[in-house]
Image (tube, rainbow, N blue to C red; front, side, top):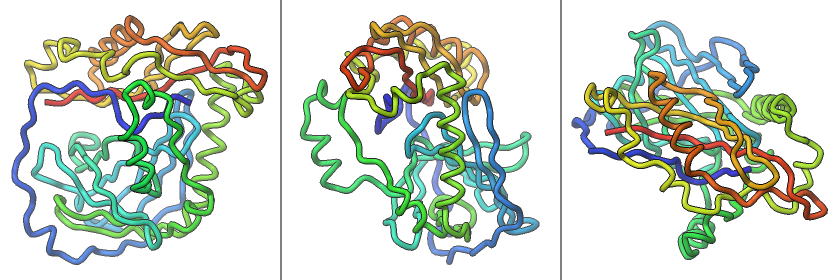
Length: 303
């Protein structure tokens, strides 16, 4: 519900350092699991995580989901993920069936010391087919708000047995995950339970005749001037995942921060601007009657 192909973004100025040139030529190291899958149920999000490899080669895969659907937020924690770039793109692949995808990233650290590769945007096991992207791009801006993106199937998820990441990082790698079918099914169960926790009528949402949809361009709901000035002056950036409660009239009634890289000034800026500017056509139940729903998205503050 409310899933879109792009984040809301705040742009100021783009700057990046040179990539690690030798990493592109290296053969990826293959890492086997060194822990079991762990699924964490939180009030506003779900996470599954697993460690691969040992010692200096160890990488922890963290996969977050903030609402039902196929969109994933992925981070890799470990020394091999180090990069000198402030931001850039890596090549990501869920093998052996799905093709390679180019994905934007931010570097970070866990506990202020362990390198972390944070993938930006909504990641899917299978990238959108070219014909679907072409159909979307041929639409008017207004039509795009309600474009129905095809979702990744359980069969596609089950067929993925490894994840490869290369380019721009210290050491390209392949994580031998085994079939992602069961882990992602557990994540889906968690996100389905989120709706009930949010007070959403799960049964009615399973039979919607129309999903909630923005009435205006969400990319215009926040402006560069909404970048918190102290954060801008200090060079800080952030990813803020938020969720809106939306009533049967299409009016946002509450803003919840699902997860944020913080500081809190970014969270406050997001909810203030989004609550002021967001407007929706409400979700409709199977009988065509408006019902209360939700809308979730990410704001990307970067320079």
